[in-house]
Image (cartoon, rainbow, N blue to C red; front, side, top):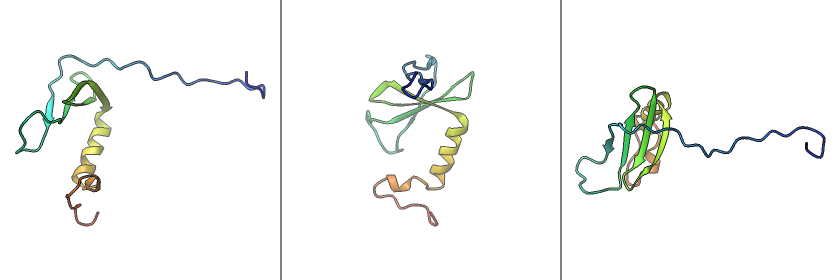
Length: 96
């Protein structure tokens, strides 16, 4: 109980890692003319669910997960130029 007499609830710590399948087919996202080790981003799609996995080639054990709906929204945002301001030397899509 808190000093005011109300019961406190605690949010569980985010310590559990989601189970990452070991048989993912990773696709490297690198500029077409780039060679070498990167680091690059790699993307894989879950085979039995709608999970999407992302990792950096320099740290392949650190995997970020999201779902297909969020991934699709992100891709549409990239195509619309919503993130161009994060890239040095790239003009944004006209009208954005």
